[in-house]
Length: 307
Image (cartoon, rainbow, N blue to C red; front, side):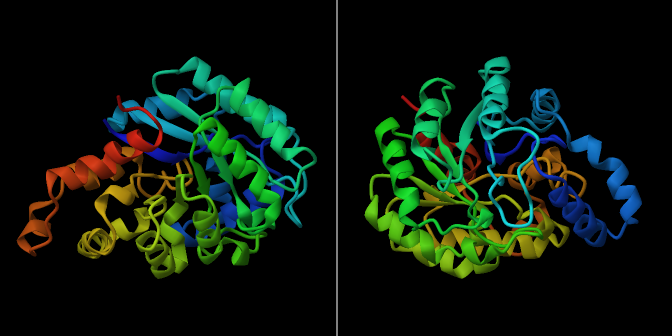
């Protein structure tokens, strides 16, 4: 089973305009394309039904995807989106209702919201969401005590928490996203599965160190796609990661749909399932057990999908 633990539904109204402006500007620089051309392609990302995602999952051979709702409404300089946080989470729940065998939704919430814990309780109970996503770049640290009632809810419902770590697009400040702040949370909630998105991003070594010194922290590989443009470097980095932490703590993720213009889902999956012979010739090898765990086995355990 292949499980992508890090995906999103996108719509122009679900995130305030400054995000899309910043994303287009930086994407144009990354792919060396005119800004206007990238902006024209933005609608290719917008689908809140899950139809486009499932179509791309089928093409890539992905069995299940975890949808991560995002609450950026309180972020400085961004502003509330047109859709309320209740509606945004309901959109994600509706997509799961449409594709119950393919999609799993995590509730997105900013713990600084009024009655945030009550909202999370509603999302988990009424909407049937199976985890919680904190995007700390909105302006809070994961060890802020405002987050703790949400962690308690996660324990109550026996669901994992996924924390954004690493850099993030303007106008956000990613000082809030340094993995070190998750260590205290992992220590205070040792029975709570915590996923550090993007394997810490620019703080990779810190994320690895935290994972190595806790029993409940996992790392997802979303936004590692650009590394694949230099294949040998990508596979060396992956091998180094697996030699640094147990393969049982590493999860396949994509951050879909944000990088699909660079590396689509099919190519991203094949990077793991069809490793080129030239990589093996360089002495870089992976066991079937490692690949099976990364691609879905480890996530299935965290998500309660195993017997």
